[in-house]
Length: 82
Image 1 (spheres, rainbow, N blue to C red):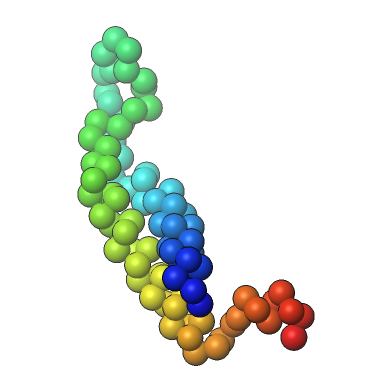
Image 2 (image 1 turned 90 degrees about the horizontal axis):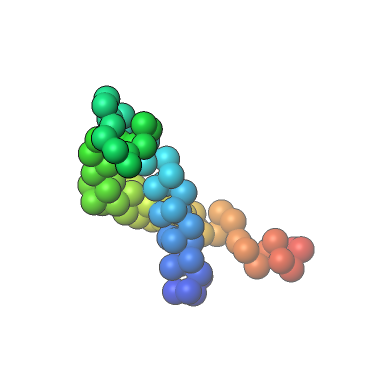
């Protein structure tokens, strides 16, 4: 696997995990003020969620890398039809 493939896989994993992590721990604003949305979270804690996302995506990427190195699956076999 090239480094570009590894980076692209990590980016896809990161975004997928982010959308799974975003709703965790969200509490709606009880009485929104002027210009605030009713469904807006009180404290979105985006930095904490980005850190969690990065760690979880790294674990998934390491699993992907290990499986790829063990030749459990190969992108080349899918493309070549072998």
